[in-house]
Length: 547
Image (cartoon, rainbow, N blue to C red; front, side, top):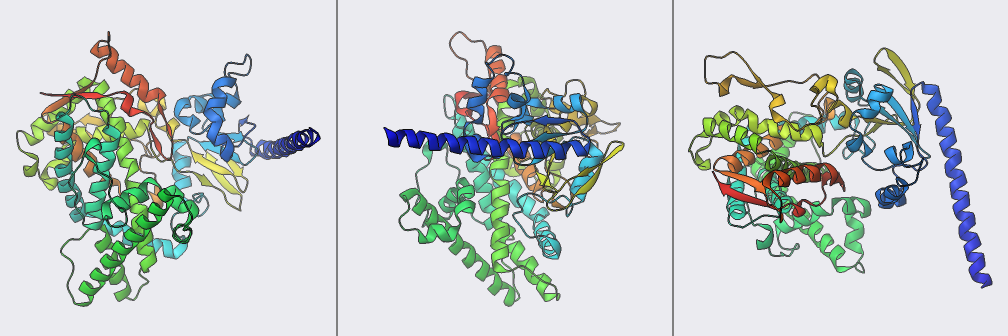
């Protein structure tokens, strides 16, 4: 008993000490925030506290029931991705910039478009918190070479491969009474497009219940899939640790085998392209991998610094990491939005019929057809506006920085998080109208005077700079923007050309009720895991019918 009492006292002292230290840090950060001269909100636990991140939503759900506490800064701001629920309301209350003071760091949230463009432009003053690549002159070289690989020949590969896979996915979906595997299947499609356009490897689409578990040590596709599904774990532990730790559980040893297998594949392709280049010939397939190798070698031949073998591998990992789940989650959101909004399905179908007619997808042409499918692209833009999968975080690092917000210049202390308020600028009625919280893709289309068809008179709008950050901004914006757009447009056009899809109805539920239920699920069942996603899309099966 004495031992137990001593243990309890030790735990109590530890908790008390940690709480006292946390409150002391919060007080210091609050005093630092006051000097900036912006509105402040205080929360008692840091957003990035790893223990809190595991329980934040569940604890706050209980706290909200407590009178006088349920509606406070603690419950409003003290959980991951609170911005998604808050949208533009906090900025409407406090202005274009405000601070959330925590025991860890102060977080400055900015929703002024001009200030946002300034933040993205000043890459050195406001670096990202976690850079996956280098900085300085070496980064400029990497950026130039990697951007050159995302070119029109590669986009044509994306277009043709996506059409093949989307046709197979559609055949699988329409063969079922209902489909509850949209999220799984769109991830498969995205993975296979990346495999073909990134590494020159094509795979036939397999639906969720058709897949068989492959051996990651012998299968390129299964290796890449396992790596992408566990990329954060790999970055946390490191491939070398996984390789040496023979005592790890089986699933981690499988992950180690996948890393080794995938590394071997990239090494073989790297050596093959080097041999082809030294013999004065290029590989016939100019995918991202071979294009990056050739661009690097051309740079070295010109007397400049190319990329090392490890830098090429690193960039290919970033391409896959950045382009896999982002596109797949956007597909999932968009498909459920379309299921809940049949009038938008009809609107997009009209465009597809005008542009593509009765032609089979094998007869669709990237250069001629993709630019005309503006409504299909507007589905992606509107979905990203409301559900941006990868918001970017900046900070001031070790030096204070000045920033002009509106007509006021503020001095931001070192080690301050600087957060572009995506959810606010993407939904503020000042920029998007009174229905800014409504998913309405037609807001992206503007009809112009034209002597051609009504459809060809439509043009995509170009929103005010700094009010749409779907692919980030500035010098570190996403080089794969068009890659993702081509993949998305080809898929949506395939899905709606001859088919429509709706939510399944539950007992006693009308189809309109089912659509409202899906809309509500999108809004309430979306949160970040690694990226922002629908948490349980399988709870809303879809049914397909031919038009």
